Length: 131
Image 1 (tube, rainbow, N blue to C red):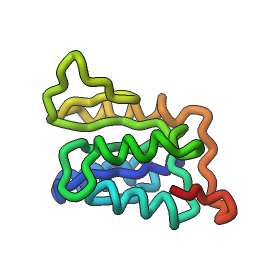
Image 2 (image 1 turned 60 degrees about the horizontal axis):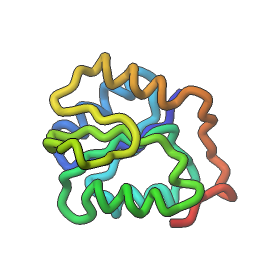
Image 3 (image 1 turned 90 degrees about the vertical axis):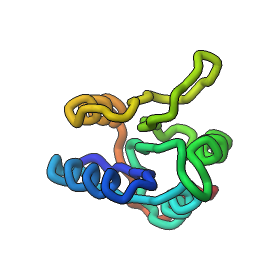
Image 4 (image 1 turned 135 degrees about the horizontal axis):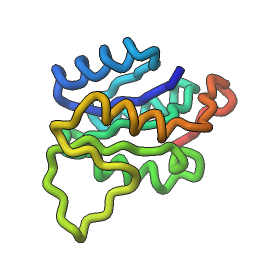
């Protein structure tokens, strides 16, 4: 069972993706923006095998979330799948995999499976990363 953190401000898309992934036996935590996602990473004691991240969100956007996550020695190891309609230029570098919206659910599941290979989710409260 994969533990996933889904960071998406669009209510319908967030809930639709959550439902589809849970039907595929994934455990999905959701956040509406980056600060909420960082708070979940700090407080839940569960390390997701992947973060699905929108870039354009109110509050803390995906770019700021990536910067803070990347500066953390433990959290920076979590694979990122950017899911965005943002038009990237060749000069912009985004870590991880980028799925441009709209994307297929089959492709999303394939990318999640690859990202989560070999990842053992942790539920130890002692192992909580501090951001």
